[in-house]
Amino acid sequence: MWRSGVADIAVHRSVLQCSKDFAARRAYDLHMKRLTGRTAVITGGGSGIGRSIAVRFAEEEATIAIVDVDSNGAAETAELVEQQGASCRWFESDVSDNAAANEISEEVVQHFGSIDVLVAAAGVSVGKTVPDTEPEEWEKVFSVNVKGTYLWMRAVIPKMANEGGSIVAIASQLAVSGGISNAAYVASKGAIVSLCRTAANDHAMEGVRVNCILPGATETPLLERSFARFEDPTPYVERSLSRHPLGRFGKPEEVAEAALFLASNDSSFTTGSELRVDGGWIGG
Ligand SMILES: NC(=O)c1ccc[n+]([C@@H]2O[C@H](COP(=O)([O-])OP(=O)(O)OC[C@H]3O[C@@H](n4cnc5c(N)ncnc54)[C@H](O)[C@@H]3O)[C@@H](O)[C@H]2O)c1
Image (cartoon, rainbow, N blue to C red; front, side, top):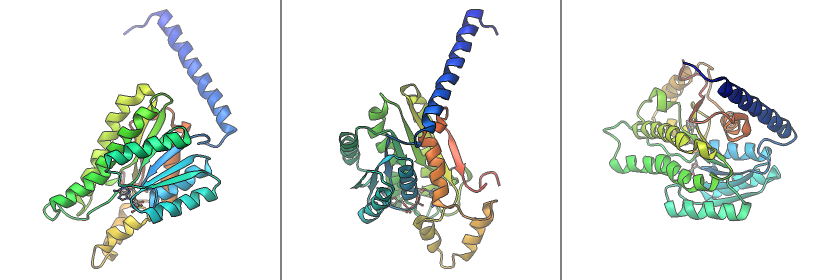
């Protein structure tokens, strides 16, 4: 293997230029919050992880748009966001509605000027094995978790392509490890990981980064509901706790920190990746 001296000098110069650009941007960033001037759309922002992400992004001076089927939850999040001094709009919408994704994303751009970040956090689960899962239940889980992520990516990528942007999808540690009695959900989360990897390749040269977070069990209404399906949840709670080497469940605020890293320039050389925020579940 060889390379010409001229090419070496060119590569060296371009590396130097990159580090200078990076250093200059870091110095500039130090004077600003991490999402100053950026607009983030957060699906599923009306509760749990999506809500924590909305509030954390607002602390970093992002402008927020919430998309959720639960209008009460979305409005409550908007209030929390506005308490941080950030602008916020919320939209009652099902993420699996293609026309709505197009219309809302257009309206966000009209109103706020751009979409720089998409967090796809809307998700549902049906806690059943393969034979017990009805085809309609399978379709519902895939429609919200996978189609909803795809439709929102489809709506925002062309809007990000000129200026660049960051997409963060909330998958699950179960996409890698499997789970118990949660067939459609686990399969849908695996599909989200694959979708993000391929979209990351397709849109890297347009400056659009696409990454996933794999949370472990996180204290949200979804986790409560998933234990409540068992007559006696105690052994399931204990089993789940024992799968986390850190010995506890995560907090939505801890997932929000990871989302902030992936949404901001702090992760400028990261795309197509899965960031585990799982208390050590996958490695344990
Ligand atoms: N909590 C956990 O233990 C955990 C672990 C791994 C991954 N996750 C993932 O994190 C994401 C957020 O989950 P959470 O725990 O905060 O749950 P949550 O139930 O608290 O919040 C989910 C939000 O999504 C909204 N939503 C549901 N269906 C929708 C639809 N069709 N269109 C628009 N919005 C819809 C809900 O109204 C709700 O506000 C989900 O994708 C979930 O699968 C959660």
